[in-house]
Amino acid sequence: MMLRIMDSHCHLQDAAFDDDRPVVWDRACKAGVGAVVPGYTLATSEAAVAWVRAQEGAWALVGLHPHDARDWQPDHRALLTEWLRQPRVVGIGEIGLDYHYQHSPPEVQQRVFWEQLSLARDLNVPVSVHMREAEEDTWRILREVGHTRGVIHSFTGSWAFAQRVLDLGWYLSFSGIVSFKNAQDLRDIVAKVPPDRILVETDAPYLSPVPWRGQRNEPVRVIRVAEIIAAQKSCHTEEVFSFTMSNTFELFSLPGDRN
Ligand SMILES: [Zn+2]
Image 1 (cartoon, rainbow, N blue to C red):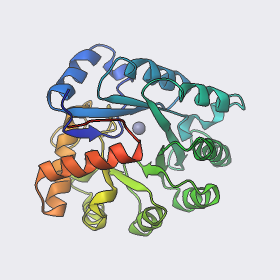
Image 2 (spheres, helix red, strand yellow; image 1 turned 45 degrees about the horizontal axis):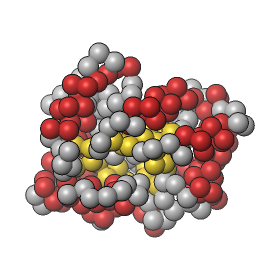
Image 3 (cartoon, protein in one colour; image 1 turned 90 degrees about the horizontal axis):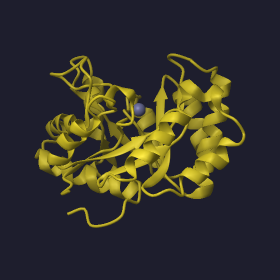
Image 4 (cartoon, helix red, strand yellow; image 1 turned 60 degrees about the vertical axis):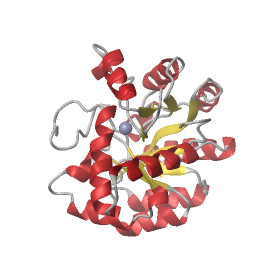
């Protein structure tokens, strides 16, 4: 498989792909789209570990999403550590804070985010962080833990928050939200972020870009996200493919010869 661009965050193990996962992945591979597949529950972390094992061009992350933080048990530290020894498992995610839905209480989310982020720091592996309406607490925990290898996925925060995490050495990943009509503020942020800190993603099966908004998303549509980034950067889409792929390989320490 000749990789041209990386979808840095998509959930190919999700049940939404149970009927046609090989077909969806084949479309991605034919277009040169590789994938980083984060877990969000224990079951989907385990499924990601199992699925990437035989897939050239795909790597997995393992972790508990803030929605499911209340499922965290003390022995999950050892479980994540064991999964991180498996082939093609390259980091912890997705983890973080989501105060919009609060499916788990904020104080539980904070504790479980702290646990997983400090585990990543101790093991020196990168993290993929979900942050929604929780900038102050996210920043406080990032600063307290002091881990320098991470990305805020599907970034929708403020420019002030963006600058703080960029100063910490982190990356920002942009999803199909950049194509939404009401997302001009986000496109303005894209224009200001240095190219060597930008990742692109689909967050499939969610967040399909326009003109497929509302449909099930899939990795090949990361190309549409790259087109929007290129428009904001006044550069060729191929350049966005290239710098975002380099950044994804760098952040997740992906092996080898990608050309
Ligand atoms: Zn996600």
